[in-house]
Length: 243
Image 1: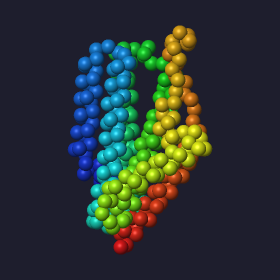
Image 2: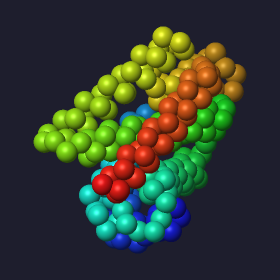
Image 3: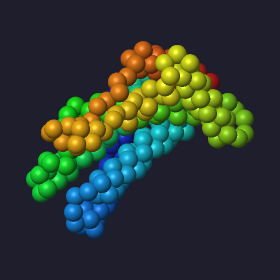
Image 4: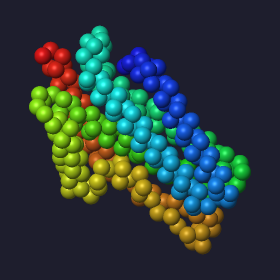
């Protein structure tokens, strides 16, 4: 799986590097155009990182589509499961790189403006939010990959609409089940922004973040669903190769 990921990185390294350069230039432009630290500056930074993260998720998704379309790639003597997991691993690694750059960016802000703008217990709550966002990115990628695998397994026209329908049904079905049992919509995404901000006047040391917490049963349910979908994708791809 690591060899496949390195292969994909090598083939797309110029495009990936261009994405990162564009992101750094955009962030530099945001910083230069906002001379003082404030909510607007941080909001623009977070929005830029979010858009870039979504772009990388789509990059991994389209890389998987190319794998399904490439007959020669499917005949490579590598396990089918590794081919399925490779885009997922690639997505997480790229998102971790973005997270690392964001952490360095925040460190620069602290050096320039001091850390007074950070709420109390910021790092603990931020780490938990990042974990939830990374899991959500991986889980949504699995749903997208499963939908397109189902569509490509059917020898009919209009497969793009089938993929959209399958994705919508599974996404809403999972959300309905989680809402019925645990009162959440795609647990990790819901919990990524589940925190309260206390006013400075209420806390002696300044602003404070308080995470609402999460229901780990919902996360376990999503992990089980993800594992089942990956196994089904493996079977469908093997059947397609045999045919």
